[in-house]
Image (cartoon, rainbow, N blue to C red; front, side, top):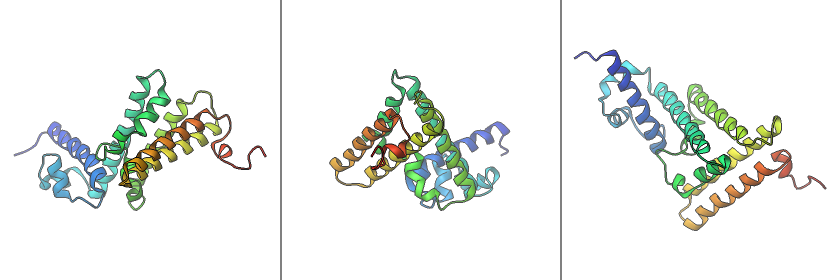
Length: 205
């Protein structure tokens, strides 16, 4: 039975959305095409009518996951009287630590993405750039190259802390990584100099 153009596009969107969750949960190589299509409620037979390859789907699913992550940051920030604090509390939380299939793709797939194609890595690079731009906007007192340095340090801390917190079996240690990272991110955001200068033990000596 012939599928309408509208239905074909809806099916394609369903596969991308399902893949963005399943890749975060199982990794790029941890799930096959059959299960990816099943996750979207479709059969494997229609895959190559929609995508050139699994790598093509991985790139598009990665872009979708990164776009959803930045939209989530923007929505949380817009709804709070303290936008930056809202983003910090959302990201460096126990709830986000446990949100493996719907959480940050940088945490779930960062190391895995480094081994993927240029197209997949480009999706992540664009998403990282978008995250940095949001952090820039949430630091109105800091402009120019200093703001980007600070945003880079903040994002690195946030992603690293959640990554480590997910690895740990010790609940107290896991939570501590999130708490300490949150405090340091706030300190970097409030500092007047570059992030690297604020961490330099020789600065001001």
